[in-house]
Length: 402
Image (cartoon, rainbow, N blue to C red; front, side):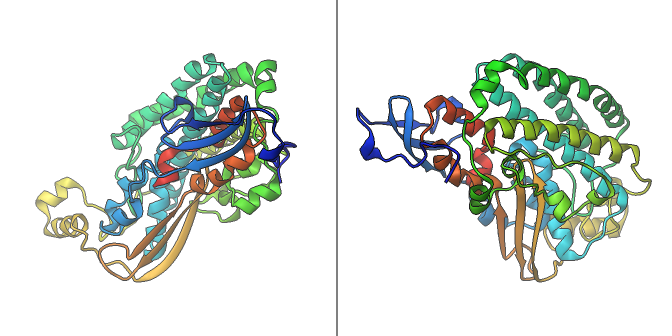
């Protein structure tokens, strides 16, 4: 079933004392509030039963009681390591239902912001893998680039972690002069920082000995579980939503989809390393070729007017009131829209009955899907490898539980 020769080991064949160990729900190595009840013989894991739902916040039911524009802050709390991708994915879903066409400039701005979020997400995942092998230096050094990205978020929307960035139809505001300054510095300096982080871990013998062979999964099993994103690509399947179902003009750019062949922790680390390079290329090309034009579509029934106009124009005041109070008419219909999130295919299944709120909204959270495979991936391994496997899967509790 997996590449692990001990994966199908029977409890009856073990000589010695079998212990039950709770890994979580508040163990710092779980990087979130979820639990795994392990059956172990010494250091060897014989079986595992995951328990989820500790921070279930009923996002989908909350969304069914809120106007469409007020759902964006709810999506922030899914994978909070790459909130802008969640935000923009939701906006694209509503635009698909309402038939809104955004300017090319909005597409390129969204690519820039989403790829910054992808880099931020991968920085967290890969630097934490290093920490869990005992290598703290890479984490403390590489973290500065996440902060530089957060500085750009803050300049764009006023927030750093839970961003609520963008609006249905585009962005609240255009890139500011300071954002342009920060962006140019990032494009110039980030490759050097990534190279230095790479030199600390990628060919480090101690690191390689710890992560190679840890938590493997085959391409067949990954597909059977419904894996997407870096975890699927690490197993050798080159599926990427940005290529298979292009959105936001991703098809204007050429980029490589990194893949592995063993599906182990080292491959998952390497796929994310290479994806950061590709994301940097996408940001550079989109920024260099940023079109002229408006930063939002001409859809006054969805897009909040400027505050100065609200104070002086009756039409702007009416639209402001209708949008804030959720009185904008939404077409009835049923759509599914997905984007390539930091952890894989992030989907929104939306049913509208034409009312002021969604009739039904379901989030396809990649974490929830691939976490089902965790017991199989760690069965037969030692406890320290189980920690590394969890880190390399990048299980985010907010996205797991929703």
